[in-house]
Image (cartoon, rainbow, N blue to C red):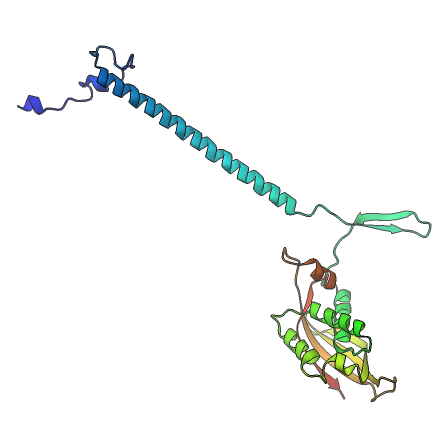
Length: 250
């Protein structure tokens, strides 16, 4: 009985030899239409599967190459191709210097002096010219970040009450600022001294001019992809006031 149940090995089973198929059967096999049809079908199915896998692989590779190309084009397209140049002309109208324009270093003390002088002058200014007053207020806010303490302080000073609003005060008085000195106390904090003069609408002094002093803490923020064109126009050097405090000098 064992010989009936014994399974033929791969070497003994002629169906599993590696002889090439001819007409659906291998050399030495008896003709069997069912076995030949099955073998032919299996071979055809395997060939189709291999071809399909090859085309799928080629399709995936093509898609990856296309995505890489599109990503590269987007990256190149997002980069600015415009490079501004500075041209200097002498008194005779001849070109003297032609060179790429370089952004000034925001840490230059002269730039910080000018920015802080404008900030204090515009923050304390009271002008009967509503357009000039509005321009001054907008400049002040261009140097403020809503996340910093200086924003809340400036907002309270400008809009806290009707008496503090420069637009309401301009109905009765005018205030001018004369910057006296700007001295660094630390790399980020500067002392600003100025003389403040208040006059009524007829130009008569309301009181003797008095001295004021402020400590202003700043930070420099570089441009990012989120930086808008309006921010660049209003605050080109990225100097922002983080905090400030002032007092009247005796």
